[in-house]
Length: 329
Ligand code: SF4
Image (cartoon, rainbow, N blue to C red):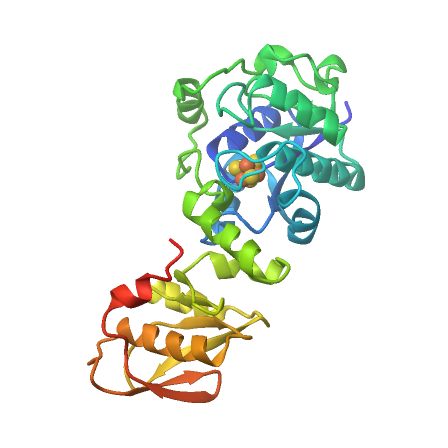
């Protein structure tokens, strides 16, 4: 019999891993596609994803859709946003659309996802799932092995490529059945579900909204800017980002964004900072003074800072409270 191939939407989480395992155990070849919107977890999860794929025997492919996501989904979701900046229904539809494109390119037969009916309020209830399927034009092609027995049979089942009786009928938020499957399959090192998407984070939404209100068109290079540091909007409108700990300083140092300059303290230990390139002279001076209040400094003394090669010498503000007035969080 011809070996059938499925494209799985793979988040790196447990449910999509289990969904793939249920397929592989039925003799289906699975390509795990992780779609990178730019707003996933702040840490690099590739090693973790590879580990999960290795455990179940799927190949991993990471697909970058950041540009397409910014242009078509994030700022104009047809179905609106969830609680924060998360356009979950449109986001899912986009992911299925991309997965279908890959399916066609790879000559695969159907799609698989780890969605569970009724598990999440906005994106995974029955109506939302149907909307997503219609919009991505994947009706009948998408098999959701964890809830399949509660859903209409898909092409993979009606064609006999997959035995529906060996699929699951999970519904709701309980994780009991998933835990039984973990035990049965011997899966280890998995992550707990939920979390990971910055668009569902309240603080991230505040930073996004502030950015859109004050800055130029939002671009891919702006995504990392919003992931780390303390964010301030200065009196003349410039944005100042101040690293809070060592790991944030390191991340901020790596940022390449032609709308921002890097600022370092000169001669004293201090946070790594970024400031809007078009900051007014007054905002530059304020930024320098604000940054110094986050260093071990004496308010009576002057210190030097390096603004991308330009040296500025100022005293710190009298207190952090003066800087905090402009904090957006
Ligand atoms: S949580 Fe994030 S990644 Fe998941 S559907 Fe919503 S917006 Fe997309």
